[in-house]
Amino acid sequence: MKHTYFCALVFFSLSLIACESKREKKAEMKTPISMSDSVSTETAEVSFYFYEEKNDYPDAILEMFSPLGNQVFKPGKVPFEFNIKNYPFADGLSGFQLKLILNASDPVGYNMPIFQRELKEGTYRAVAFLVDEEGLALKEFGNYVDRDFRVGDTRPFPFSSEPYLAVNLPYDKQEFNAEDEVTIDFLLLGGDLKLDQLKVIIAIDDAKYEVNEVTPVRISNLPKGEHLISVKLVQNNGKELDGPFSSVNKRIFVN
Image (cartoon, rainbow, N blue to C red; front, side):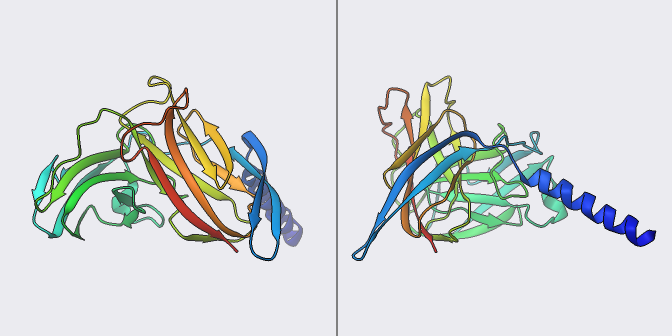
């Protein structure tokens, strides 16, 4: 009797897990994509789509104490200091961390709110944000912060009120298996897609997908090989923005 009850409980638990794992795809678009080399041409029908996402920490607050806006440092170690509220960062839970992007580079994760980065002379834009258990950026106002600063004798970025992008996923040169789902996760800073009449165009090779909300986009059924992913912020009429971070490119490999 106990054995039967245990088996039933296991089956029920697995059924719940299976149901939860089947997330409904929204705004799915399938399009052919070709990969050519010196030997053959492979064509596949890739899928673009997104899921209904839930922010478990909408009240999380990330404050940046250092660097200050347009602060100037000597080349070498630059201090970064953050204050984090309403988020279990201090508990050291697995997968919870703070991520930092400098000048559209790949994000670097940290498990401490105070650290240093060895930086060369240059002008930098820092975008820091908190992530959830899946590693996706939290996207509510206050979950992220941005700041410009300089290292050495450099000029600040030209003033611009244009919104811009920060790409969390994927990393440049990241590798995936053929059955993997590739996630394009990004933040929009300094603006609002609807209020500013903007849209985001995600392109992989010659295939394009447009989104009108800031949500992770998934891509599946990519053929094996090297792919170039572009995430671009444009006006609804297709006109590109002038800012240096309105477009971000990443190269990935599917094995």
